[in-house]
Image (cartoon, rainbow, N blue to C red):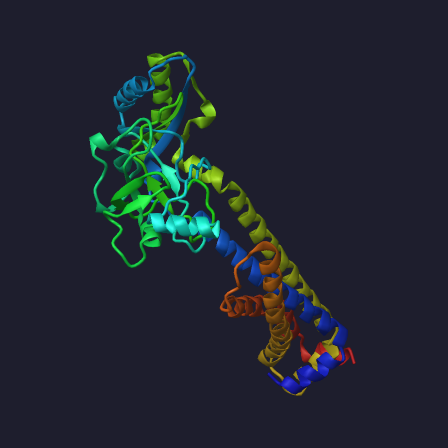
Length: 410
C-alpha cells in the first residue's frame, strides 16, 4: 500500500484527515451502542409468553344488573361462546393475560420460616420469598392458553373455588426453581401468610402481564379460582384466520344472551394485538434507532466520498506523474483505498474507546447493560467496508486519469 507516501501526503492535509478520523470515531461509537440497544429491544419484544399467541382472542364483558348471579351468567356465556363455529375452547378469567398490563400479584414464600425472615428484613430480597404474578380462570384454562405442563397435573374440578383462596396452585418452572432451588417443587406447600398452598403442577413458561426484569418476568402462578365480579374476560381459542370472525360472533352471542351488559369494542382483541400494543413503544424506538444509525452512516459515507473527490481534484498532477513513470491504474486505485483504510482504522481505534465510554455513561443514567466487546469488531468491519465502498468511485476516477492529460497540466 506504500504506507510512507500515504503518511507523507496526510501530513500535508492534517486538519482534513483529523476531521474525517473524528467523524469515523464518533460514528463507530454511536453505531456500536445503537446496534446494542436495538438488539436489546428486539430481544425484549421477542420474549416468549408460553401461550398459544396466534390462536387466542379475548373479549371483555361487564354486567350492569344488581344482584346478578355471576357464576350462572358465566356458565351460560361460556356455553354460547363454545357453540360458535371455529371456537375450540373458551374460558373466563378475571382479566390478567401475559403482556396485557393488568397484573395481580402477591407475596409467596417457600415456608413459614422464609416469611419470618422477610418480616425481619422488611423485604423479600434475600429471604427466599417471591412476588409472582397471579392468574385465575375457569376449568380448561391450561389447555385454552396452550400452556405446556412439564410436571404434575391440571386442576381437578373440585379444587376450583369462587370465593377465598384455593388450596392448590400451578407455578412456572422459573418460579419453582426460585422458591425451591435444587429441590423438587412439585408437591411442596407454599405459604402466603395465611394459608399453605400445595403445588400440583409446573408449566414451562408463563410471562407476567407487566415485564419487570429478565430474572422476574417468568415468575407466575395460576389459581383454580373462578372470576366472581361483574367484569369478566372471555378467552377464546380458534384457528389464527378465524379470530376476527370469532370475536364478532362472540359479541353478538353475548349481547343476545344478555343485552344488559357492556361489551367494550376496545377490549375485543386478538392476542397478537395485545402483544403489539404492549411493545408499541419498543417497536417505535427500534425504528428511530435504526433510522438514526443509517443516517449517521450515510453522512459518514458522504464525508469519505466527498473528501476523496476533493483530493482527486487536488492531486491530478501527482497522479499524472505517477502514471507517467509507470504506475498502473491498479496502483492508483490501491493508493486511495489504502489511504482511506488508514484514516478509517485510526477512527475505529478511537471510536472503540469512545464506544466503551458512551456505554458506561448509558449504564449510569439509563440502566443499559454493559456493551459486549464483540460489537466493536463488527462495527469496525462495517466501517471498513463503508469506507472502501465510499472511496471506490473517486479512486476509480483517479485511476482513469491518462498520463498525457496529467503532463499537460504541469
